[in-house]
Image (cartoon, rainbow, N blue to C red; front, side, top):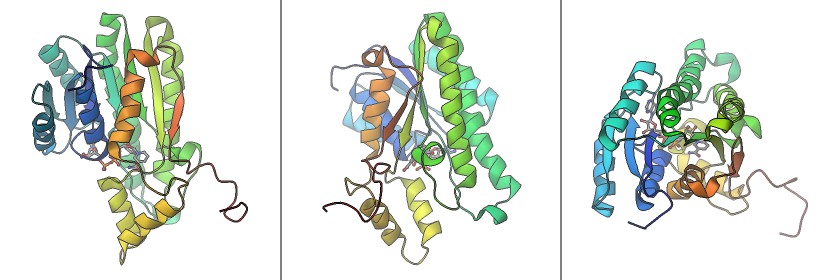
Length: 268
Ligand SMILES: NC(=O)c1ccc[n+]([C@@H]2O[C@H](COP(=O)([O-])OP(=O)(O)OC[C@H]3O[C@@H](n4cnc5c(N)ncnc54)[C@H](O)[C@@H]3O)[C@@H](O)[C@H]2O)c1
């Protein structure tokens, strides 16, 4: 374990069984945090085992819970406090994405995104904040996206709408809790290779999903997708005291993908 910026911190991380949540959990342990890994998927236990294999001193509990269910999140936060004595950081990472043409997108699909992506973050924050108020400090890191607030592709209406909403929630909570020393920031990720993106690639190009992934990389100035642990590093910084004057921020982490002005002008 790296002696680090999250020593002494207790974090709850949602959507931690796979993808970015797994990368965030691994990075939090690397920097010395005690963590509660929350996921709908019982495989969260296997993911925790993998991290313990890398860091034998890791202090991890797991909770199988649905972020869309407020009571389950209240219980998960209570278990975290019971196991580790405090709850200092909430990484609101769990999210879903289903692509469909707008005129075919069902209300069920729309509401599924609202329930998980918006209410899930809402519930996680409401479950964690009382413990942060008790401590007199805390940090919340919300997984928004470049999608919705900055860019969008066809078929992402429900996803884009919900991810943009998280920017508003971030700003409001940052203002509301600033004088009580709870910082609230969000990440705006471009693309990382995770089960979510692999599924989107299948929905976009069922015959050749790998080419859909390669095409994402071609459009990124850094010519690659992010690794989940690279996003974990951002979450670790935002959750740590190193980010002590940062609140209400949207931090873009996209390998430059939202920067190019044209596809045709330039020297390379
Ligand atoms: N991967 C990307 O390129 C990308 C880009 C921008 C933003 N994001 C955001 O980052 C977050 C994580 O994305 P990912 O790519 O790792 O997704 P993923 O689908 O690969 O993994 C998500 C994890 O969350 C869990 N989960 C889903 N619904 C849940 C629920 N209701 N309650 C508890 N757990 C639940 C899943 O079981 C899974 O383990 C999401 O909020 C996503 O919108 C991802």
